Length: 313
Image (cartoon, rainbow, N blue to C red; front, side, top):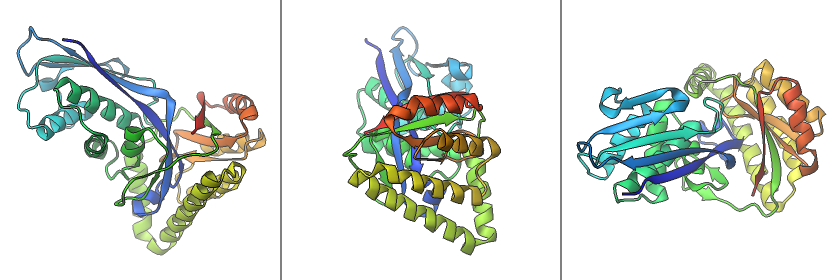
């Protein structure tokens, strides 16, 4: 019996983080340069139900029944078995690897879940359509993020630019004029669930002020979508600047992110902002393609531990 393999890309949020949790639109795009990969190797000589999980990136080597039920890989597998109404899986080894930095706002958890759900459902002879993959991955996201918006599992599953409003139908959209972004990683791990929880507390303490912040961020996302559709990419820069200022005001930026954003702007980017939950993780800059390497180099010089240059298309 052959091995079953699936991969899924990373993602980056262009506009709308945090506000998306409160019903505002957000734009996210896949990052194909980094991916999660899951390989299911059948073990027909072993007893049915024997599942070994191997994930070197997180130093995991254990049987499924040795791990806590809320371990994300375990939860995803059991969720899938329940979805497919399978009581016991054939014996297998599940190998998980990823080039996506963890806790950096690039959708690592969602990518692993999507790749796992696809590979394992194929192994079980019932490959899932994208809609069901995304729905199940969202349930796993609750372990990672507490109250996830749903944007990570959506953009990672469909691997296309997504305009997303929580509770509404997914809007995938085309990019008539591809454009370049540079991603700079602070190297600081950041807990999305903690950041989202702190913002929620601040919102509950002053709902009028924070609703104004969220509405302003949502309007920027709407305008950004129009700019992308019209191909006026340079104007995204000013929108990114405004979005970053608002994210500073709601308390999710940090000194390292601000330094990288400022450096990107000084190096010639059209604009830059933090991306994701903030307080570490990544920032992004929209740049003229010919300046991408210069901007990436400048980011590394002031402390970015890695940079990724990717095209949105």
